[in-house]
Length: 518
Image (cartoon, rainbow, N blue to C red; front, top):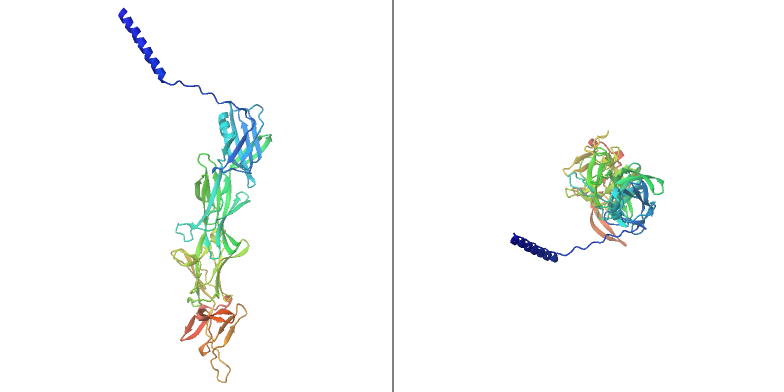
């Protein structure tokens, strides 16, 4: 037994040596001193949007509340500085420090913008440590504040492919703009124009998803009420007139209804035009720090064929005596939506390139946007005499019914959704032979003629061989130098057996029945 005991002593001794050796190789842990508790004498926050941009020089309200003690801790009501900072007034009845503290707290940060208070940030039921780490002398992200990028798109040919609402007229740009209103009062908030050459707003529109109303019942004590923000927005197409002068025409309208769900905030786009059903949801967008908002604009293509009373396409020549206008009466004013001259009897000679690769009038679809009582009037002037007029809805699929003089217009729609108007004008096919006053009248060639009527512009022309007058439409055949200037040499487009003839304007109100001129 003695030998066994000695072996146990030896084993224990060896084990102790091994343990000592292991401990010698393991570094000893050092104690970490606790974070020192600091008294909170100054309390500031810096408010930034979700892209990190400080909300500088903005009127804000900050209210911090002790939910457990049911008392106010601190508040601020005023403007932030150039860095978006605001220094709160501490009104707690006890000393505040960064050490642990029992209870729960809430903080509300709101902004006064566009004439209303809106929510920027809010936390409820948070502990003191969270309040210290996130809100005391820290940068606070305005999690309810969103930046919207408006983009105006349109589908004039109805093929489902949308294109930017932008047209370069050659003299200037037809640009989109976005007008924003409060939906409940339709009080105007702002208008943002598209950048040159695009249909995208030149600046972002900033808005909260939550509207705030409050009552201040004591110093730093506020009773808040919240509701989702709802906006009304119009898409305007500003048609270029002159430098700095545009004709604004509404081409779309929508309601933006925000859902401030913290887990999945969204904005729903709702139709506000007579097209379809007002109140129908167009899209629901997930809100991101910068959210692209597609604004749908309603436009379409028109093309006008200039016909005589018999339905023959008129070769309108190269002389700018013809003008085709597409007009409307909207917003208590007469508006020229588009105008142009015809080429080869088809207007416009220059315009937007339609899907069939030919020029067309690109026109706001005012009947869809303004309502069924809003139509366009197509007028054709020839030497400043109105030789055609017709009023139709922009979304018409049939021509107007004949009047007591019969059919004066046909309407067809091409596979590319281009509305083609066949306009039966009140021009009169005419040939004039001028002779002298000799006993036996002789053709008088080389005579200068002035053809004038009670309305319209005079027509200056001359006679050619056989005394036949050159009558419009004219085509330019040369340029001649005159005294101190240049002039054009032109001839009639039409002739028969070498004898020119043409078309003279007669006011549309005096047009004859087609069967009398056929």
